[in-house]
Length: 425
Image (cartoon, rainbow, N blue to C red; front, side, top):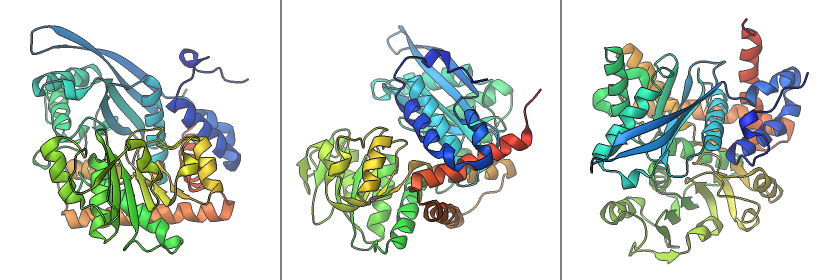
């Protein structure tokens, strides 16, 4: 008997979720005996939609819509970030939770996939309003989360501050401190050293591993970064530290180009002073969409999903694309890039450094024993390199893209766990 489609999505264009489903369809022929279980990957385990009413500073009450999705928990508790953005949708959060399932399995972490989001522009709220929003959201989803159930983390629009508020709110509601309920916290309240740069560092490690396979030196290589937030800025700095030349960078305010190279540390100072890369005096302004088509060796899309499409993929002149954002490349664009010989290190591998160090933080919180930053970076690099090698081997053996190879490895692990656990009742 064929399973029914998700009723609330039937007949609609579902955006990021539709992209994820197409990625699963592409990997299904390679799953062998587990292909019959693939429906488990196409359905979120549970979806919670919450109303978040808060008092604004002027005394009025505003309502915001929030989500928390558990995609799959066959391999362990749900794990995934919380996004604050004005364009957050259920489709997006569903897809992000599913990509977390694949990502965690790809690097061998004992987690399933989860994700949360609130449809809000955090730039329009005061710190007090953001705190009230975060605490109310945490209370609304509180019965779903917990150190052994679902562990949120930062994402677009959230950071250490919001994670501290979430941890405190959850702890107050259960009557004891539970530092392991979230990751990405400040170090002073149980956070991990190295967490802030972990995603960007993982992007660099994965990109460098791919470069080694095609004999592309990192030193002197041209690098372009789309998105200069936490992930993009960390990746730019680490490429710069390894003597690569960062020639173009963009963010929501605009894009800048300097063929001689941009010092990311200097640009960060400009961003801190002005609020964005626009107006940086040591580089020329270019239209923001053009940053993706600047000729380079490494392109790091680290903004939002759906940035590389069939309309611009054929103009991209990068040898390696290391996806710092979640879902930046559509399936149609993937086909074009594969045909053009571009190596795409997919998001579910390239940006797994963040959740890997989140795992380290979670383990440290459970044991109340913390590691040095050098130890964390060393462990991160080892896990990322081992995962890349296993995926590269499948990529070579099956003659498929790195994205499909990553999905083969990850989906097989998830579905094997599902098969071994069976169905209850």
